[in-house]
Image 1 (tube, rainbow, N blue to C red):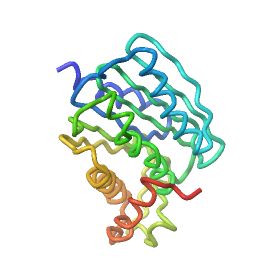
Image 2 (cartoon, one colour; image 1 turned 60 degrees about the vertical axis):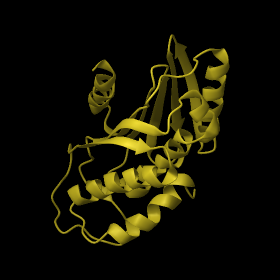
Image 3 (tube, helix red, strand yellow; image 1 turned 90 degrees about the vertical axis):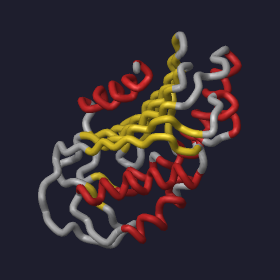
Image 4 (cartoon, rainbow, N blue to C red; image 1 turned 180 degrees about the vertical axis):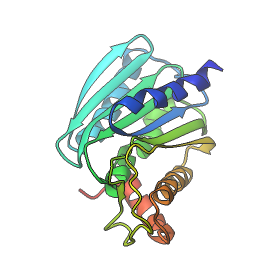
Length: 218
């Protein structure tokens, strides 16, 4: 189906932009409206979350699409791109300039991705109690891979270089709740750390996800 192809195309496109963390969200319904009032609401939501995190968003708008690009001088994040589509697809991509890439920076993206999906104003626009599909990807890893301290005090069990590696996972039929979205993020981050050759990180990661995913300490 075409609606399922669009998130897949989104993940393919980000591959040429350096190290990228990407999320595509396929919601169960199209937007109830995509008029000027709806766009103002989405702009307000995105700008509130991004500005609180020291980003400087610019807005682009076309028929059925509202897109943001935000740059940041911190966290080794080059930019963040967010797109809301009237058809119920939301895409989010962060590109990084870090070698190795810190788990703290990966979790940083959660500090606004997750809350905005369950925000009351957002649910009024994109109704439905679940997410139909959520592909997530960490593409084109830096040469030195992933650094996980101080969140997890572990060393990788081997020193294999991970430059250019990619991890893509897809989740389906997720409830729009803090608990279920945190479970998705924990599963994805766990897969990243396994690919990066870490062991015995599960308990520390489980404790970190709710804190980093909903209120990132800067």
